[in-house]
Figure 1 (cartoon, helix red, strand yellow):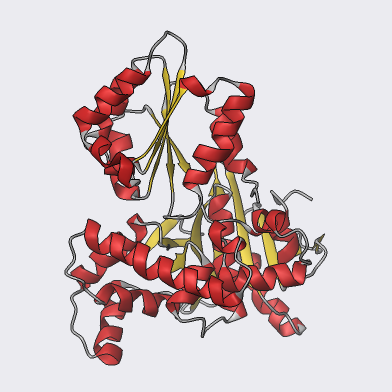
Figure 2 (cartoon, rainbow, N blue to C red):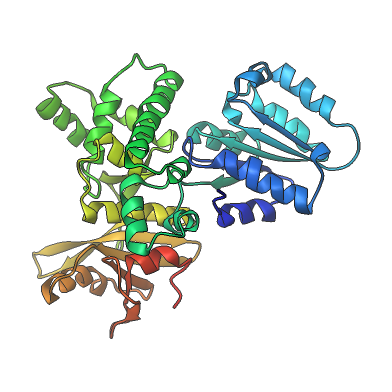
Length: 412
């Protein structure tokens, strides 16, 4: 079964020959290797080059463990280049290679087009900025979007497909599993045996179960503002543990670096500035989030917000949580929340998410923040599952969740 990942494949195709190191980053098992070694390699073989001019190494494989040593890897790569034609270098889990920045820089000087994957955002991002000095091209990859998920499950109708996606998420391997029991088993194993162990080993933690407790707290509170001090208070009241704000901040950094969590900052729309102290956290995949909670808390409102947030990130938007300050009287001000403020270049979109709108009062509650924004950027209300898109008299786009997830943009 081949899963289409055309957005990311086209990004790679368009970057061929641009003289930069293409760095594909994302969570473990979200499809980076499949994209690079299957989809992109097949494109190269069918349209660009032959197998002799493609050099590939998976540094996570046992048989390649000696190639994680800088000198061994360099000698191996040199031995594979036998003529003056352009070579394509495909390297998986590059963070496992010693001094990878120096090695990649040296091959940029040759007729070699370089593509690498990695699962550590901080290390790769900092190295791209410093060591590559503008010669790195970052491509963020996420678990399957709903549209990609459906391309592999074409026999399901929207309702059944969404129910499955809503519960088990978009990790590519899950799509090939037929039973709920197998899906749950895989997701729990991925979370415990891959993600947590990676974080513990990478950051030299002493099997600290505090990071597990933090994930449980955040998974239970998707869509809720929080901060490190609030989490510390929860530890004290729920887990009867004392943990410093500094330690919690470090743990959150570890989880973001591993692409398990994403932070949405609070943004003052009228003041055009970020407001500190409180943020929201979303998971890279709702299936992983549900596995952390043993599939017990699957509230549609919060999971819909989770799915929309990751969908927006995968489309390239930077996403914040908006706050609109409104003057009620000389002495009173009121604050309205906009679920998502999405920016992409000069484009901005404001989004409200509401799973159900049962009456005019609820509709007014969702639209009120929009009416207090005095700019002309697009405003979108995403509701329920099924709703044909339309614009109301105030120019606000109303669209169902299915339509939003299956469209590539907001232009109707």
